[in-house]
Image (cartoon, rainbow, N blue to C red; front, side, top):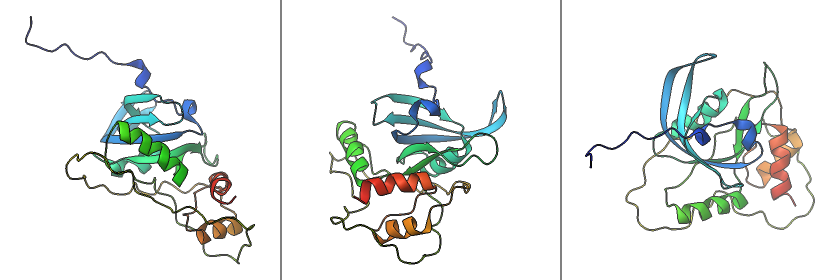
Length: 210
């Protein structure tokens, strides 16, 4: 038997097509930033990453992300960080609407923790969002039960050694879909960061504001 290992066969299932994951909760394990990759559309930067679709169970072991805003959100987590967010699109300003990750909420953290319990890794990070707008007049929200705690830590797992350090993903280019000031104030009052778009803010309020 040969002492040499056969080269791995490329898996076509590892190609990341954003539209196939639109609106779904994704857990990223970025491993490498590739600068100046030559593509059919020119030269671009890309992030190599494992992707777990927590809504469908689909796993891409070694995908390349080229979408500019996603690269910005993921690259600071290279090589040992994790990023958890729901995939969506921003406002169409120049050409196609940009693909973006919105911040995760507590219910989504539970989905990620279930995956990590079976596939232990270290703590995952929020995809970075743009700065919240100035505080508007007070917004009177319907009476609700107490909001769940934000930013809970993953459940403890078997000792995997010291957790690697990671930096929060950098802020993507601003998207022209401003969040309604009253809704932004309501989210801030509950202790939640304001998502980058009105659509993401409405979706988050649907989770935490009822």
